[in-house]
Amino acid sequence: GGKTWLVPYVRQWLRSLPYHPLEFAEPFAGGGTVGLSVLFEGLAQKLALIEIDPDVGAVWRTILGLQGERLASEIVSFDFSAHTVKAVLSKTPRDQFERAFQTILRNRVQRGGIMAPGAGLFKQGENGRGLASRWYPKTLERRILAICENRHRIRFRRGDGLQFIRENANRKDMAFLIDPPYTMAGRRLYTHSEVDHEELLRATASLRGDFLMTYDDAQPIRNLAKRLGLATHLVPMKSTHHAVMSELLIGRDLGWAKKPLELFEDTLFKNLQAHGDASG
Image (cartoon, rainbow, N blue to C red; front, side, top):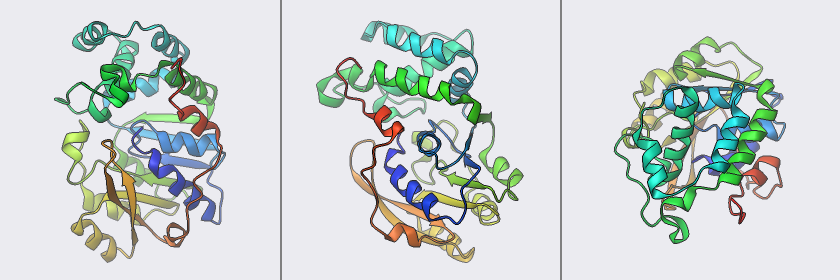
């Protein structure tokens, strides 16, 4: 997922808390990279993923249902070529399983993993591998099987992230990563990017559990956070095109974010993310 850069920050934030969260929630989950890292590293006992996009929802329901292993098998046995990719992406899926496979394939072959309609397919890609530049079937298989092994600790809901935040406002045993579709780039990156940002910030400020929000650095967002008594801190991140950009963190106390990051930890999920093995 595109949030890998955020994992060290979330790790540092959770370790700074005076409590160990029972459940870690991502109300705008997407691929759930951060939440899965938190779960696999034992930084929370359970994981709640909420996502409104029906295609992404099909992936989570397939993996967390009883067809995750079948999906992993389908990925490693897929005969990858420009012809087969276009054939899969051009047809209407007959069921949730086909929709899940099509969504993963589209995410891997569209530029930057952008899921919005109209995103183009790779031409050159990483290392000149063209269309296959982000297709690492063995890595995808390992990730999916690791999620399957932990499915009893993960719950997925297809729905509105803001509604979930409101419903869980009194959960003191929960920690929230709130990474909404962005104010400026939102329409291009995500299919479902209509979010009332002011209402979202107000609802987040009322949470009893701790939270970390991420936003693109927009002055109206900074102003609103300040009015709500929230702290902001700018951090560097790499975009899908490897440009170094700035991201705005918002929270109650971001003192931990000003300390050096512990970047080099050997963790299960980081091992799963190493996508360069020859077979994958």
